[in-house]
Image (cartoon, rainbow, N blue to C red; front, side):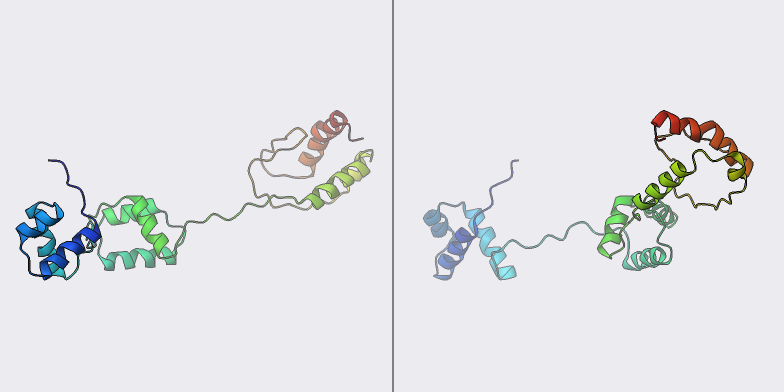
Length: 197
């Protein structure tokens, strides 16, 4: 059976006004051109709730109690790296099946959003210029210079680096011998290829 049209608010108010003036269902339905059942339903709703407005719907009941939600929120505040899939698995152990997106939405309403910190590049533009000027300055230095140079360790934030030169794979620990080998095999040919000299 097709769904009937919703009666406009003004029309519903007219029905109530005419009803309050003392007329019956038949007279109201003839005057406004509405079916008697519709008139009866409008008046019944007005008597019961005192309004002709659309009442708010209840919606679906929540699967999870407030107590369990509080426990989830407490768990996430203790360990912010907890994923929604892990929370879903912990709820499954309590025999509650909820979609992980539901968990994320509910946590978001409580101000617990999934955030990833911005990944800043390892070297700033200033440091890149300083490295290039150092490389150009010491390009023709003899091998003795590089053997006496003390190299500090740079903390690498990324596993994948790219640049204009060739990449060198380092197996094991980085020491001066490995560094000198990289300079001989990769850096100097790259400088010549890129015409930095």
